[in-house]
Image 1: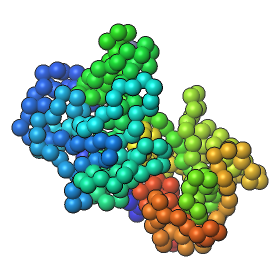
Image 2 (image 1 turned 180 degrees about the vertical axis):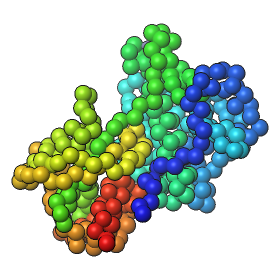
Image 3 (image 1 turned 60 degrees about the vertical axis):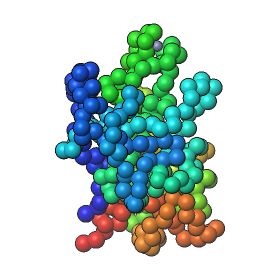
Image 4 (image 1 turned 90 degrees about the vertical axis):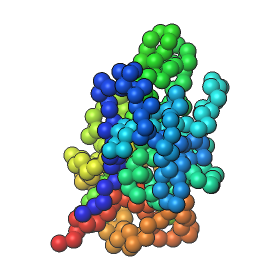
Length: 318
Ligand SMILES: [Zn+2]
């Protein structure tokens, strides 16, 4: 059986019902003797000895309530929120400055990708959940409607504009990711920026007015130039870089020659089951680089792309 996807398994009561809108209830959580705070910032998530650090302290005014467990309420707090500068995009928590860039190593702080590989599964999920929410706050300090600074509400599950009264809610961006299979071969692609040898499942954002099935078929046609049969849902994974939800599918090749038009993809090709099985013996780190022209390097086990690939390999075992 495949392992649960990394960043899943948060074991908290999120109190995502009426309780968060009750100011007295929220105040009682902040004053609760069992309250703990998970600190996070640009350098990463607070951790020590391979575990998250949940500080038993009174949370600050802007701390976000993640939820409740048997010990009490658990908050997360941004320890270095970027200044409210309208001319710059705020940097992300624990994911580095630019896309795909790792944060500088910092004592007592884990980057999100490090958290995914070092922490126990439930704590990695908590780190992703906290970073996802705090990153949303970093990126939504101003009203999208009128530009006024917004105020956190519902213990951090929404922001309200004091001028035009628009309510803003944490957003999740759906991304379809799909393994196109044709008997004993599978279709994988690579972006030019990836380490040499790295190939992964095709993927892309779902557009407005589009079903998941339609997005899968469109992305495969754009990226690889081929058509597929009906996609089969596999599993999903929150991907906090910064706010994606990866929706995993498998689909059978139906026809067409390889030849996509997506400029982000450097190469798309078929790999045989034997090639993929050889590569699957090795769990490559995010930053690992294969030799030029070397064997296939699969995504690390923390990525849903790898779960899709492993599941396809297992399906051959009788
Ligand atoms: Zn507004």
